Each structure stands twice: as C-alpha cells, then as structure tokens.
Image (cartoon, rainbow, N blue to C red; front, side, top):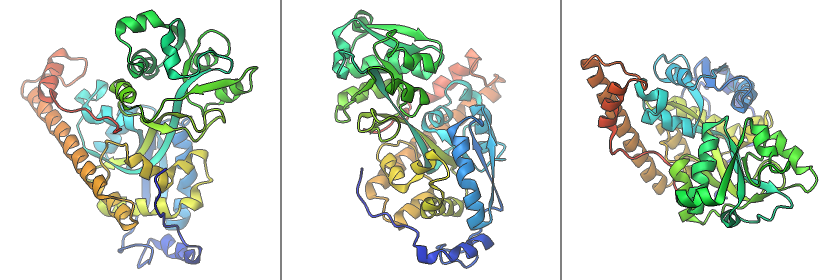
Length: 400
C-alpha cells in the first residue's frame, strides 16, 4: 500500500465536537465558516445492500458531531436513484458503483435517454474483492493452468456482469482466441450465486468467480479439502489489459478482506463511491471529505464496510480510478498532502473526458427533440442519433 503520512483527529481536540454540533460556526476544525445542510439526503442501493447498512452506520455519528441529520434513502432502481440525484435533486449524494457511474455517464443501456449530468467522486465508500477459486485439492494451481484444457468454469447465468467476467474477461486475461476458448473451457451454468461458488467443492465445476467476503465462501473454506484462490498477478499488464477490455471499471488489487485463503492473493475489486453532481457546492464536498477523514476513528467500527472509507484506501483507489474527483474533495486532499501533481493531471483528463460525453449526449437529445424522436434505448431511430454523436469517444476504464 502506498506510504504517506495520514493526519488523524487529535484526541485533544475532541472538545471541538461541541462546536461542530452547533453547525461549524467559527470552528477551528473548519478552514472557513460553513454549515453543513441541516438535512443530508443520501441515496443507496436497497435495504439488503452493504452500502445501505454501512451508510446507516456512520450517519448517527455525523449527526452527533455536526448536528446534520442524514436521511438514508434506499433505492433499488439504479436509474431512479440517478434521476433523483441529477435531475430531481431530492438526494444530495449517492452511493454508486464505479461501473454503474460509467453506464450513467456514457448513456449505456437504459441511461441512453436519461438527462446527462456530470458527476464527481466525493469519497470512497467500499470495495468488494473478487477472484477465481478452485477446490483445495484441484490440479489447477495457477491462472495459466486454466489453459491446459478440459476446464469447467462456473457461469453465473443469473448475472450479466458475472457472465461477462467468465465468458469474455477470463479468456481475454488468458490471451485465448474464441476458438481456443471453445476448445479449452467448458462453461457450466449456475442459477444462483451460491450454486455458482459451491460448484467447485461439489465437483460440478473446476473454477468459479466469487467474492471472498461472501458467507458461502466461509462454508466452502471449511469443507473437506478446503479451497484455493488463483493469483491474478498485478504485474501482468497484458493479461489485465485483456480483462479490463470487458470489465473496464474493476480495479486490480491484492485481496485484503474476506476468507483467510484469499488474503494476500492478487485479484480485483469492485468499488462503490459517494458521488454528487459536478455542480454540487464545493464547500459541501470539502467539509464532507474532511469529516469522512477526521472522524474515521469515530465511525469505522459502525459497520464492516466502514473500514473501507479510510483515506489510505481512497488514496490507493485514486491511483487506478478513471473518474473525476470533486473540486471540494481535491481541495481537502491537497491540504492533507495526499493529492499529487499526477493526480491533478489525471483528474483534469477525467473531467475533460466526462465533459465530452455529456456534451455529445446533450447534442443527441437535442437532435432527437428537434426531430420528435423518442429518447429511449429501445428506439432504434434514437440510438442511431445517439451513436452518431458519441462515436469515437473514449470509454472510461481503470488505469493500470
């Protein structure tokens, strides 16, 4: 993990909590006078999600320390949560996966006809590690061994991203052509996530794509023979270039959480972020970033995923992320010396890229309105207009 000095909230300054509760008035904790909103509305995935649970974990701490009431709004529909953040503006900040934000910005799928609005990252929320697992007594020891042939790969038919990960991203990581994939790999459909993972200890598949934080992996680790994880070498740039071609927003990383057999193994992470529209008040983003950082020790134990909001983890994510960070957050990160000149260059590139997508999509919607064409991803006439305006634009993908 990248080494740097991380300022912490001195215990001697705990008396400042009183000033914070009054609304930051003349508080030494703030670089300038600023009152956080009395009500902070945060959109998250549904009530069964870790994002919802972990946000509910730190929200009471925020209220105790600042007087701001955080209302957490669970919204299972990603498109609806996006509209509430960017169009209706009845939520202030949203917990969203980096992959979903790419869909929102580039107008992929149902977002094609939605109002395009530039967004910015306010803080890192959480990350889910993923990797390829085999039975403990499997002859498959490395990723290269998957090219020996006759390998059965569990395919989560219930999830398009998981199907893409194993049917397209995995062969690309291995450098296999379509013909070689057909010859060497056999895809075994699984109707649920649990069935997908258990297939390797039940002898139904040789390898499965799983998240080591899942409870089913704990069961599998305790099964006769146990399990092993295949190392996805972080230094193998050619292999990762292939994988990211199909799963562009995942981040290659050393797995540090979940079952013990996965820790220390190179795999990948799917990141969730707290995001806001680009035009969100800079002082709001600055003060949220400052609170997330300085109060980390106060809220980190409220939920397991809250530990992933550490500034060090955010710092590591910045080395890979292709998404622009809010100006207020940048200002704070500069203050604490964890924002570099290279970060600034990358951020400006990301802003320019996002602006190009937003401008192109706005032009597509305008042409559609002028021609009275329904703006829908199900409308071929609109999609022809959409594709004309967005053709040639570079897609977002994690940096290696």
